[in-house]
Amino acid sequence: MPIMMTPNSHVRILAYASLLALFSLCRLEANAQQFASSSLPDAPESIGGQSSQSSSQEEHQDPQTKRILGIIPNFRAVNANAHLPPQTAKDKFITASQDSFDYSSIVLPAALAGFDLGTNSTPEFGHGGVGYGRYLWHDVVDQTNENYMVEFIVPVITKEDTRYYTLGKGGFLKRAGYSLSRAVVTRTDSGHNTFNLSEVVGSGAAAGISNLYYPRSERTFSNTADKWGTNVGIDAATFMFKEFWPDINHALFHAKKSSTATP
Image (cartoon, rainbow, N blue to C red; front, side):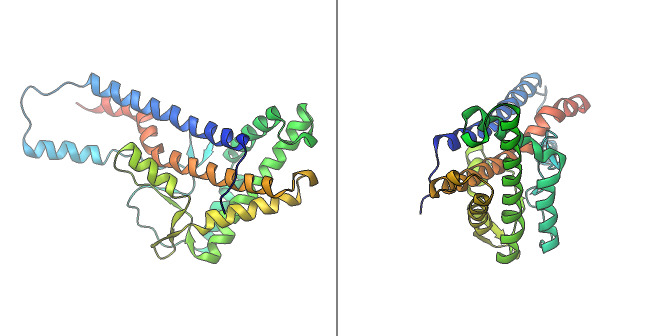
């Protein structure tokens, strides 16, 4: 059954993806400026020199940080080719808790609450500060609910790895396609690719549970399907952000430092 989404849900996801596009442009601009400021050597380098330079470029990738820009939780992302032990149920519980209760976890619900208030998505919540407060606590509970379903409860049952493994190489389209596909493809605890039941089933279950605390008029099949689609869409956009974050982080905060240190 296709997951139907309302125009507001599309705007939510597009706004989140636009943030990624903005920082990607910053990355490209920083890289272009760095390239333009560099000069070619007067004499050709030896094969060994070329190999050394190529190797250093391969190794410049910065590691994933626990938070993106200090305001977006990033506890599940690991660098390409990382060899890690299988996740235990405790590990999955911890990452779900970090994504739900770290100080940075309030940013997305706060932004969504402002968007929902501005679009009057749930008229029963009212307007002004009181209305914003109602939207905020519902969005916080929505996020927490989904985190525990997607990152803990369902993956423990299905034995799926909830970490996001970056591709880390290839062109933009290849890496973007890979990151978006992780919404439906993941790894098992034994390291094999499998359909991402944790994401698809977990997000749907979270959308269903949310009917317990929303007004009765909002407890419709279409609204539940809309929340389901929004959950999956935002997670897919987040995977894309995680994929390019080491590159963006390097371009914005470390490229200038590395260029200055190079003789």
